[in-house]
Length: 464
Image (cartoon, rainbow, N blue to C red; front, side, top):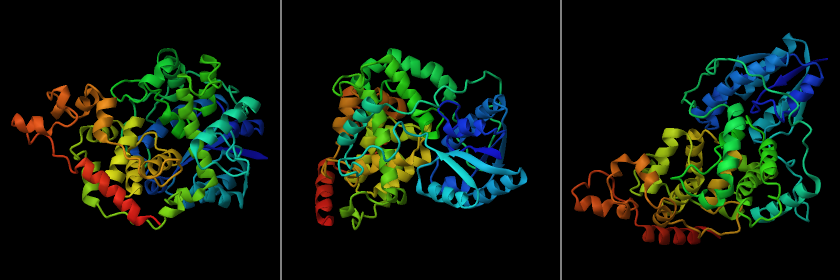
């Protein structure tokens, strides 16, 4: 029986169960089918598509070394993708398809349609513990992070996880054209991010050796390069979360033992990723832009399109917010602390529907991922999985003073404020007015205290 390996978001040799199983069945062919219309509907960022295309070029060489020929088919959406896949299988007498499963509801529906017409073997490769395996005593998915984290840690300590697909295939070092593949989609260059093979050999070891022990101290500082930078690779499946965890354990063998230890902090972020993926699996309506908390289903967000436009164009008059948006637009990435600040500001101070912010992020993020992005935005809006109710509102001014104390991050992305003294950098309007530079930077679009009170009153009035 002829076998086919179907590439989706799994551009890697390491921890790739679909590829390993396909090879065991004598697989000699792999296929990748682009779906630009679906990518557009799902708000996939052009920079992420370029990142995938570069990794596909690398992956082709690795597959060739395994005796597998890659065919790239240029499609449009999932419906046509199904037909193109089945036509390819018919032409090449393929009777079995091997692929790694995807989490989102449209992808699940697509796979069901494929499985109804040909043998489709799916494997899970995007999490460390199988989705659905971490449950509370009632057998239900946790709805708050902390108890999930404790149960996840307990499960890992007791049983570990499946490592049978780690390290089965070795990468080959060959020259290739990173820009071999291009799709009918807007492109934003991603070359500032090295390929995953380099990230695993250089970036991750350097982070663990030089930054991990101080991660807890500096992880919230956007003015410092204190994070791992691995999220884009995890988002497109170019690096396995299991591989990252193994490297962490090798560096810090006792990291599972004390959740309060500084070294646990980075693992905590990896478990957050697990939580959101398990959550999306248990509650597929999250893929449909539904609020997690039912009491928000009738919540009417004010139509503040003008404020959204100012926010998305970095014209709010709050430097930390505007600099964060500039970072996102210029680099395709935003520091996690800034994601919380700008999301809270949009949903609370401006009372803009979180879905607009979620879509905007996905349209620009190189590490755009529905599970994490949806979870983060609902966390900020107070509509999601969280022990804290809606009245948690970040103050962008105090957040700026705390996490960008010298204004270095602000000045990097708002060069018009380069000469503003540090004591004025977080709220520069008075200084600019006093020095005759009022036209350099916009006024604040809201009064923070008034906007906070307005948000609290509005939430109270709208919720049952």
